[in-house]
Length: 335
Image (cartoon, rainbow, N blue to C red; front, top):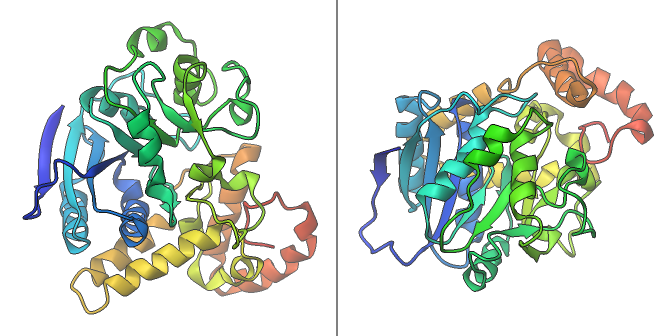
């Protein structure tokens, strides 16, 4: 594990809340939007650590992100993490998801892990109060998925007690994950399964508003917005061509929270040299997923088709929208 480029600010950062993420080059633009959303809604300053598995995040991408973090006045550092053959790709989930184990081991201080396919809304950093009051006995602070904390860690991925995209790490030693991973056969969402196996019986539970999964949500409730929206699944809001967002915006689908954060991010970059490279990363993010043929990837295939169709995409969206009642909630632009 090697420390890399740091974004240093003049003030002391040792007492700041710490947020930890990990990405590869495909997730540069989504991370920039996430960090902007955190900075716009945080109640106090925070610092950031970005991890990456060796060879998966280019130097150019790190340099770009460093300039973005400096622009947002966020102290940040990058950690190069050793890769492992046990860190496997599963569907749309890249090996980078296992970096949360490595970073949890490397950072024994309390911190908040966020998947990069999330967006932060006002109230998101309230979870630091729960992290501060937890101990290594509980091990983690996590958002309960639904209403059943007694669900088995051997359940299917959508029915595991918690989703590991938002993890509050209290101060202290971490549990051994190396031996359980070595003994574990290949199961769906390996890293999710392992986190639930290790922590679901002892974790401190917080409101689902701290990890609101979009496949559980049809539209935003403006009177009780989530604190953190998590765009789990193969298709993401940044895969939707911007000119086709009108149906989603009209329906107020959960993707709207990400679109609003993206708009605010671009406004913050107005009249700066960062605007042009950010547009390039936005364009690259459109096709950043992996084409697959399983049912779970149907939404991503649709979004890629809309990209390829160009001007023909808009009439197709209008036609397909006639079948909106059969469309899975919260997951498509065809409301």
